[in-house]
Length: 402
Image 1: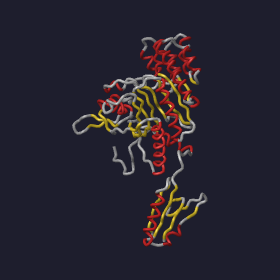
Image 2 (image 1 turned 90 degrees about the vertical axis):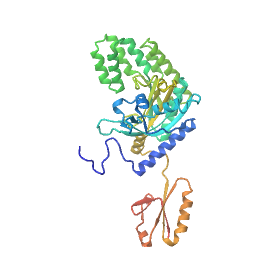
Image 3 (image 1 turned 45 degrees about the vertical axis):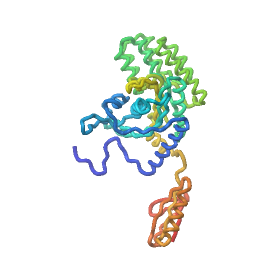
Image 4 (image 1 turned 135 degrees about the vertical axis):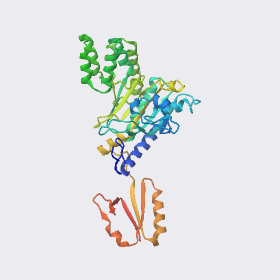
């Protein structure tokens, strides 16, 4: 392999320039403030974790983990999500704290990727974990909070889809008993949203026509609360029917939150089957073909750290939201009012005192610049939008002391 050039970066990582960083920080701040108002306390965990604890407990497949060895030969991982590290903290440092526990976070996470254009190896997540409550009320709370956070982030047009892993588990156990490989093949198609592949897989199974139509019918189970009734008629399996009843309860609570206008039920959603244990959900922003929000229930994770407890949560994909906002011209709030204070040496104290006063005001950023010749200021250019340009940079106002 040839030596990288000095300006090259590894595949999957990117630089964020000042304007993008400012928008990203506004998104983070607005979302974390929203979470705080709902009673969630922010937590920070280290970038590096032990592979044998957090690494193996993560929902990320082993081949997508970034691994490294410390000087003693112990395998470490760069965190691939925040859920497993927070589970470790809840089971250790917060072991004496009564349940339920509500925590929030913002962090960059890392996942090894194939060398494909547009795929990220480092990205940013802002999310919450609600530990110690298995009720439909808890599931509805995190869904309603995720909707509030999307709005706080500046996402105006979106839809949150709800599913439940128990429905497909139960339906496939009933229709394809003992055929584990066939069940997994169908689940994999649904996980990848490959509905054509799902139908092709069904045709290869040589099922009776009525059973094949029944399994194809789940592709139409998408909509409002009426979907629950349709699903009940498809399966008599207890796991499947219990899942649908739970979804109905969650929907009823979301109605009390006045949140159902932003939600649909999609029973083709599988979540990560080896990780999620119940309700799962995803949020899609308009004009983006991938989710900006993922969440769901994971009741088995805490037990791996010695403190069994039900849990649910979600994460916003903050850098994808930044992309949405940049593409759609949406700003979470107005950018700061930019002022340039230019001064000559003999007016230094007066100019810097004025700059200090301006900085005490909300949403004002002040840059100071000393000049030695007043003629340098003749290069100030006025623009039609009211901004002023000096030395290649634009400002809402330029104040001159000299």
